[in-house]
Structures are given as structure tokens and as C-alpha cells.
Length: 350
Image 1 (tube, rainbow, N blue to C red):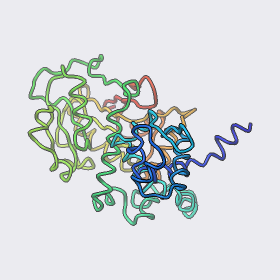
Image 2: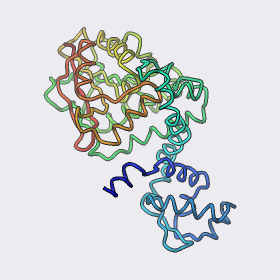
Image 3: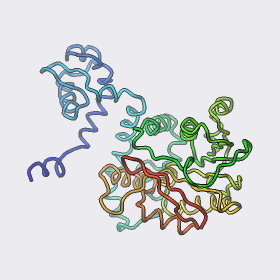
Image 4: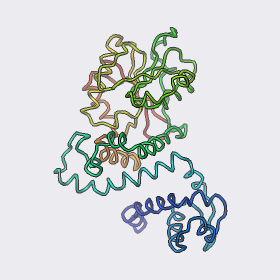
């Protein structure tokens, strides 16, 4: 019982994040790339030795560095990981933005009578920053660059946490016409997912098209995109999908940014393009598919974070069936990763 009390109820994890954030500012994880003394760290940071010892004690306690003597540290496996730009920036973004927002969340929700506002324009992120999240990143390029870097962490997830795609499954024969559209990656950013799909499934023929807003598409090198095997195209996913009858319409980590209202609009705009070939076109949603009972800690916390930042949500299997049913789809199969909650939900027009 005492162990549960200490670990689950009184563990001050937010203070650990504060210590890690300070260590990042002081570049401690870069400095401690080899056995390093306190005197050396003081010379390189010009920080107070007592402050350094207390911060290093905190980050050592969670394994981010290893303390080998009273005034000596060396890197742990986590130290090297933390120097990866995506993880480094994930921690910065989490502390600088999400921790502040989380601190205001209970009061914000209480003021609204614990009712769902259903709007990205009325969530705690906007109350704290004065802007809805996507507008905030548009207006703060430095924060946007850190956010983009942090999100790239998902490109290095272990293979067993990534779901398979049905390209080689029993979903009907793929066309062999190289001019036909095989896949449209809707809201696909700078092409992270589509490049990986092209690399992972090189035998799949046809055109791969990336769609996102003009401000994103205009930053993509068209020549490099061609070498990577896709065509960047400007499109707002709330508007009617202009490319009809593609084989696959792909949404990766898009719908968790939105509550059901906007998600319905995105899905309906996509469904109308699929009506032309209802037995051929497939919707592929690459997202977390949470269990209805027994959700893990990390997934549950990400869901709370999405509610705070953009009134988005992580959905359970039942919620996916309900949302897709409302928009005229039916789920054919859920292709799950070997480890973790991520899946590719394959659906067709009902």
C-alpha cells in the first residue's frame, strides 16, 4: 500500500519535468556525454554548484543521467536519447506549453460546468495563449519549428508499435495503371507518412498525392517530392475532396486533433469522393484505437492533453464505429500494431 501511495498518488512528476527543462537550457545532457565532474559542469555553464547538484540529483533519480560519485556524472542510455532533436524538442514543447495549460485546466473546466464546449475556439489552450492552437503556431514561428520537430518523433517509433497497412491484404486487386491514384494522404504535413509508405511498400503502383494547406505545401521541394514518389497538392480537408475514386484516402493522426463535429465534416468531404467507386475506394485512418476497458496510462494522458490543446480526442473502438457510422462508413477491419494502441482502421462507404 505504501508503494502505491508513493508512486501513484504523491509522485510529483511535474517537478521532474521542470528539472529536465532546466537541464536542457543548461545543455547538461550534451555536457555529460562522457564522465564529467561538477567542476567541469560549473565551468561550462557558469551556474551555481548547489543548483547544479540539485538539478542533477533530480534528473539522475529518473535515469536521465547516471551519478557515479558525489560530484561526478556520466551518460546513461537515456542521456544519448535526449540529445536527439525530436525528443529534445518534445520535452521543451511539453513543458513550455502543455504544462502551463494543464495547470489551468481544472479551473477552466469547472467554470464551464464540466460541459464539452465542442470548439477549438473555446478550450483552455486559447484561454492561456489568447489564440487557438493552429493560429498560435502560425503566429509564432519559433514555437512552430519546435512543435514540428517534436512531432517528428513519431517517425522513429519502434517497428512493433506501427500498424500494418492492407496494401497486400485481401482488399481487391490494386490497379496496375501508373497514372491512377493509389493513395491520397489528407492533411499529411510535409510528407512524413507518405514517404515512409512509399519506402515500406515499394511494389505498390500508381500515384501518391500529398494534400495539406498552401502554407505547408508551398514549403515542399517539388523536385525532392518527385524523387520521394509523391505529388504535393494544396487542399483544405474541410472542403470537398477534388480527387474522385482514388484507391485509398489516408488520414494519419488528423482526426484526434478534432472533436466529433469537425471530424464529421472531414469524413463527409472525403466520403463524397469515394461514392464514385464505393466497392473500390478505401478509407484508412491511422490513429490510436483505445480499448473500451482498461486503457493504458500514456494513451489516457494523451487524450487529456488533446482535450486541453485543441478540443481533440483519442477514441475507443466503439467511438470509432459510432463516428464512422454517422458519416456513412462501415469498418471493414482494424489493423493493429503488435504493441500499443495504434491501428489502421480500414473503412468503406456503407
